[in-house]
Length: 294
Image 1 (cartoon, rainbow, N blue to C red):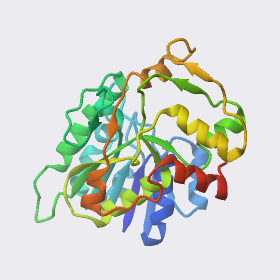
Image 2: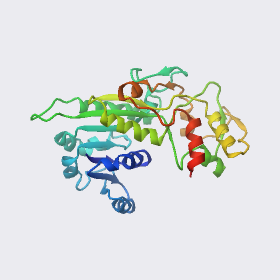
Image 3: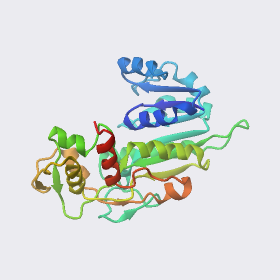
Image 4: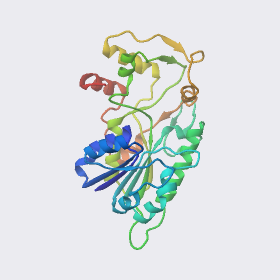
C-alpha cells in the first residue's frame, strides 16, 4: 500500500499510525515547514499544501498512490483538494479514497435517529459547504473505469465529536475549562480517535464500493453527563450546571446546540464488520484515565 494523506491532523495522524506497518510508503501534506520536518523524521514524505495552489510534487506522488485520505475542510470556494488536484486524482485513479466529513451535514432532527439514508438538511454555513464537498467527492468516485483501470472507490466518513488523548473531558477538567451546559433534550454523539482509525482500516479491507459511513459511538448522550462522568473518574466535583439559554457562548459554540440528533453507526458494523473499541464515552474515558489522557 502507498498512502497519500491530504491534511495530517489529529484524526488522519491516528490512522497513519495505525496503518503504517502495512504501507510501503506514506506521503502527507501540511501547511507548516516545521511540521514537514517532523513528518520527515517519522519516515513520512512531506508536501506543503495550503489549498490555494497545487502543491509541488503532489501530482507525481498521487500517480504512485494506491490509497488516498482527505482530511481538509472545504471553504467558500469549495473543496481545495478537488480544485487543485482533482485532475491528478482522476488520472491516477487510486484504488481507495477516503474523505473525512462530519455528522453536522444532517442538521437538526429534534433528537430523532438518523442514518446514512437520512436526507441532509445542514444549518450552518460550514455544514452546507461540507454537503457540497461530499457530493463532489461521491461524484468523483462514480466515474466509469478508463483504459481498463478501475476508477477506484470514494468513501465518505461522517465523524461525530472527536476526542482522545489530549482532547477530552479529563483534560478540560484539569485545565478548568470544562462546563456543564444543560439544554433539555440535547444529545451529542462522540467518537474516539482510535475508532476513527479502526473504521478507516476496516473500510480499506471491506467491500470496494463508493459509500457513506457514519463513524460514531453507540450512545448519544447529554454533554453534561460526560463531564460528570469524567469528574467522577478524577475524584473531583463537577462544575456547576449552567442553563444553555443564559450561558455566555461564542456564536460557533452556540450553533452546535442548534442541531440535535441521534446518529446510527449500524452500517459501519454490518457492512464493514467493525467492532468499536470504545462503544460509549464511559469505556473511552476509563481507558484514558487508566492509560493517560494528556
